[in-house]
Length: 95
Image (cartoon, rainbow, N blue to C red):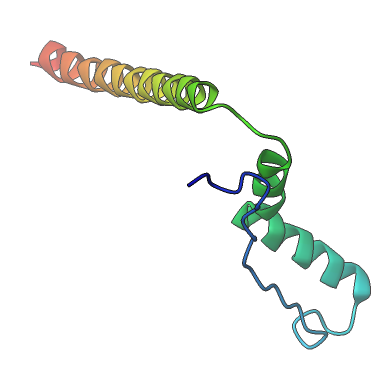
């Protein structure tokens, strides 16, 4: 009837760094491992799962992320339009 709230999801991932890839250099191996972990977002996901977040908090965070992304894309688009307008005006003045 009730869900088990204490049950946690496992993070399924396997990362292997061999000594052949890094020419036997242990410092390079550590650097490569940390780069792969960062790229895959494993550490970030583990930190997020460490504490419970209410669904309302998750929704508000997602909403904030979407808003930031839209603003960023709009800003880039405006910059591109301004650059294009600058090029078209220069060609018109030459004639």
